Image (cartoon, rainbow, N blue to C red; front, side):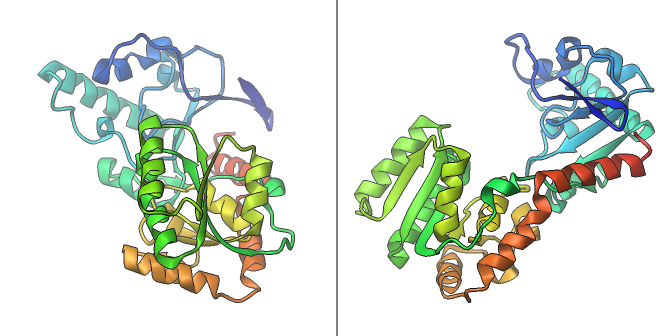
Length: 318
């Protein structure tokens, strides 16, 4: 896929067709299988887990600017230390390839991170501080326009153990509030565990899990909710930004990228503090939803594109 930006062609590539090899070798052979496209600027959107997700020609052509964009809250071990299960020759190859990638990007390219938290993880691994480019949302879909708020909580995202929705369910029982989980199918075993938990603790009438809704349907539910509860430590967390745009008060962990743009007074470090912050959010003033919605428009997609292009211009990559 190529799109024109100020006269330059940009190729944004996330995943390629690979042989069914695993572990280290699967990562290292990426350059051999990434489509070779004639571009001036190459953006690796999977940089945190795939350092070698770039074609051979683009990797070794110094005229091609390489942008490595780190969007996860974790950084692959490939960046910071050899994989212990690999033989010595693999560790040697890995170290040399990583060194080359870093020098190549520093020569003509840019390291970007989706938040300060993610930037810190990469800095710990490689000693390099990426520039920050926060993520984007569809502001026109999620922007709150004065819809009447109701006393319920929303959690949203992939139905994966990492999201820790069980804590949201337990919180709904503890404070006796309605909870709606807007989920995307991901881990069937985890989904079944959540359903069993809901039944076991007797909150069937208070907790609803809705799967497969459109963005418009999710936005409609968020715009009427007072509180958005986030239970996992992540990088940017698009779901939190979307909820803020919809006028929800975000109750989030004090650690992670989501804590960089949400109100500190609603952040928590323990389950008991989470319950306290939810209660405080429900009792907050009426002007808070409007304030949060306007603040979240900073992440609206057109503004995101402008910031991205400006960063590339500052580095003289376009």
